[in-house]
Structure formats: C-alpha cells, structure tokens
Length: 426
Ligand SMILES: *Cc1c(COP(=O)(O)O)cnc(C)c1O
Image 1 (tube, helix red, strand yellow):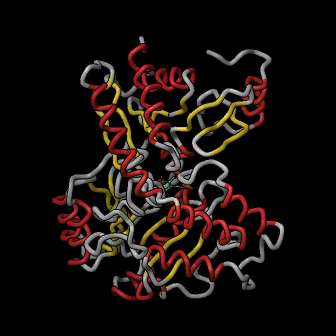
Image 2: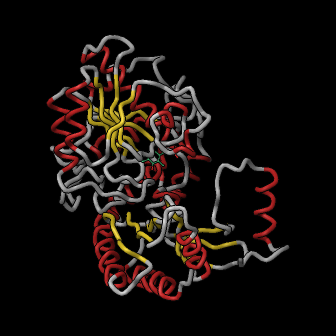
Image 3: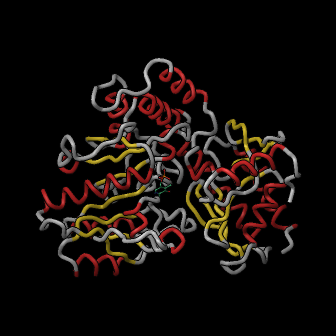
C-alpha cells in the first residue's frame, strides 16, 4: 500500500481510526482540496474524482458560483429556523418548483430526511385523500433499493449489513423485484391499501441497474390506474447526472426550461438531495403538487435547518449552474462516449464483462465473485494512477465524475482506466 508510515495521510487515517466510529470503509486516500473534476491528497497528489461524493458534486468541486452564494449568504444570515420567515427560502422554492414543474417544495437537509418526508406525505395523503383506513397504508418498494440510513428506511432494505440488529423494523412496506411490472401489478391488485410506489429510476447503490426501456412509464401508468402515488427517489439520479435534468425525463435534451419529467413518468412525489447543493452543503427536498402537498399542515413535519437561508441561496446557485453550463447535455454526450470507449476495451478483456449506465452514471462489472477483493484492488490501482472510484456491491465499480468534465479530460480518464485494467493482475 502506498500510505507511508508517519506521512500526513497515515496520521489523518490513524486519527479517524482512533476517534471516529467505524461506520465506513474508505479507500485509503486523504483529500484536502478540490476544484472542478479534480481533488488533491495531503501529499499534493492530484486525482480525477470518479465518485463525485455519490453524485452530490455534479457541478464540480468548489464551483465558484455556488461557493460565492454560500459565502455571501453566510456573512448575512445563516439560520432563523422556520419559526420566522427568511427572505431567501421563498426565492428557492419558486426557483425549484419552476425548474422541476411542481406546485410546492418541502425543503430538508439530507437525502434520507427527504425520503422520510416523502413517506410521511404519501401516508397522510393516503388517509386524508385516498381514504385508506388509519394505520393500514402500505408502500411498495423494490428489492436492492437504497434510500438512506434511518430506522424506517433500513426497515425495507434487504442489505443484511445495513439492517441486521437494528430492529424492530417499521411496518407498512411491500417489497417487489425491481424492473418487474408483473410483480408491481400483482402487488397493486392483491393489496387494497397501497398508498405509494417508491422507486429509484436507476438503482445506483445496487450497482447502477438501469431498468428496461419503458419500465418507469408503465409503472407510473399502473400506479395511476390504482390511485397510488408514484414516488421517484432521484437523490442520486437527478439534477443532470443521467444526461437529463431528471432520470424520469424522456429522451429530450432538457433545453426546455420546464423540462421536469415526461408526462408519462413525471413523479407524483419527487425526492431530491445530493447535487441540489452541488455538494457544498446538505440540501434536500420533496416536490409535489398542491393536491398532495397541501395535506401537510403546521406541526406535521419540519427541521431546524431545513430551508435555511444558506441552503436556499446555495440551492438556487446550484440549479443555475446546471442550467447555464448545460450539464445535462454534457453528461449525455460524455456518457455515450465513455460507454463506447469502455465497450471497445471490454471486447478485448477477460477482467471486465460489462459497462452499463446512463449519462455519467455508469458502472463496470468485474469478472469475479461478489465476495472477491478484485474490484477493491482495481480501485487501489486506479488511485495509484490518479483516478478515484469505489466499488459498490463487491464486483461492481461505479464511475460518476463531476459533470463539468471536458471531452479531453474524459478521454484521459478512459486511458487511465483501460491502462489500469490491462495491467491489472489479481
Ligand atoms: C444517497 C442517497 C440517499 C440518501 O441520502 P443521504 O444524504 O445520504 O441521506 C437516498 N436515496 C438515494 C437514491 C441515494 O443515492
């Protein structure tokens, strides 16, 4: 391993090891600077960031416009709580609802909180609008989902590591296979108290599983037929990552400022987080129209920091950057190039079996068992060669660079990846 004993990296890792809870297993690299598509470690080595903090840093590290908005607002007013109004939140709500074409936004901080918000909203709608008997609402979710880490969310996860010994679990969820319309239809028909269907348009954490063409539109139609809310968790897929403003957008180019999902797939409840701040601050939120969002009344839900003026200023700047720098279009073009180039390499490789994804959310599948360390070892070799990525689920490596990348930079990255893979020996 390249971490030299007594080095700044080794010291930083030892500090965390000793004083921090061991709830992550990071790649042994200690970063202290980021700019655009690059990050630097404490020894001054420069890397391409191919994780983008799980797609939070879509706008690139330390984007000057986002940092500017943050600093400016931080010097003016940071927090009022929602006990009082502040002069930034309404502006953010207006901008976000116009960008995504919904009546209302409910602002929170983390992705998991936004998912919790969506679940509460869906349940309340079910009792008060749909007329499901109290405490009997069910929400359909998918196997191998990732929606965050709260007690309720891990209750319907099927990742044993995320779940075991955290019970008792929250009830009211029905789990079905992802990308399976027959299973969805059966679940809707066999359960009379279904309130919502919560789905990731692409399963990111599970290994970038892209569902079959037409799956989301058909799932939305089934939900509509059964008066069930279609809830899209776009915390990872949203905000230009997959070559569209949202992954629930159709094959448009997002040039239309009202682009917010094709009518066939537009979510009843849309969950956003991560890149909603460009990775500079925790900003998340749930969007819905009045017929749904108006079931929430004062005291039902809230957060001390949710919708604070700094978050609001950042949220506006982050969405403006996506629009002004045409990040969806860039992700679309570069994503196609990336899969094409890696596809060529894979034809000649025994180590990698597949590249898949959409826009700049992609993954390669390593030809080894899920419990092997091969994907991890490849990520270590990529790190040596100046590119940071992380395995997800054993033998899968996700590649998700910031969307501000240029074509030249992407081709340089493809060269690093293919060289590393060709030289790699188990
Ligand atoms: C990251 C993620 C979350 C959780 O977001 P946090 O900010 O980590 O709580 C929820 N859903 C999806 C799809 C995610 O990728």
